[in-house]
Each structure stands twice: as C-alpha cells, then as structure tokens.
Length: 112
Image (cartoon, rainbow, N blue to C red; front, side):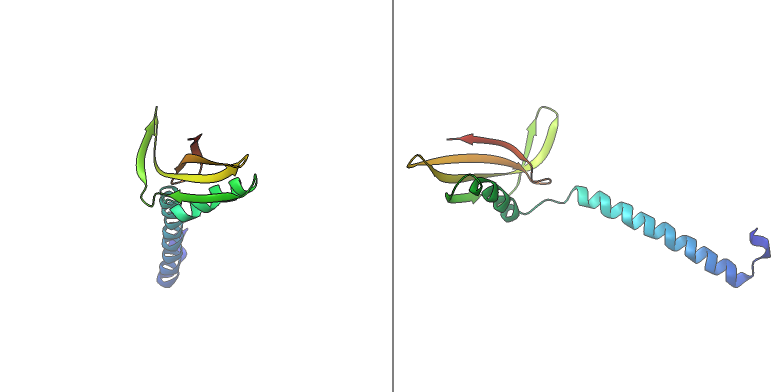
C-alpha cells in the first residue's frame, strides 16, 4: 500500500500518524494528571458554606489551608479539616468537617 506513495507523501502520512499518536497520548496524560489535582481550600469552604446557608445563616467558618493525608479502612486520600458556626435556637452551634481534597466530597461532619 505504501510502496506506490512518493517520498513526500510518506513523510506527510508519517507526520499525520505521529501527530495523532502524540495528541492521543497528550489527552490520556492530561486525564491522568487531572485525577490527582486537588481542589483549593477556599473553593471547598465556599461549597460547604453554600450548603449550610441553604438551611439558615452562618456566623463564621474556617478551613485549614494545608491538606493532610487521611486513611479510613482501605480508603486513602488527602483531606482538609474545617468548621462552621451558626445559630440554632438562639444558641451558637459549631460543626467540624472533613473534606476530600481531590473530589470536594464531604467525608465526615460532626457537631461539637
């Protein structure tokens, strides 16, 4: 099949194949890197606050800026710790939470 192509046509065909392979590898590599990219603590805190505000106003909030390794059973990830304070029945109530740094999923929340 390639025997009847001229030298220039073979170079063009080889270049196109090389480009397509490199492009495919680039997409694959980007997807793999995106899996290990973490969300910022400010973005995560904004999400948690938005969810809490749906139930009523909040008085204060905080989040640790450094993620820490966390393991529960076979699940290992990096997490952020944070907290929310809000008024419930004219009383300040504090909650602390643990959030997955990669997905933003709430792992645990408890009232203090």
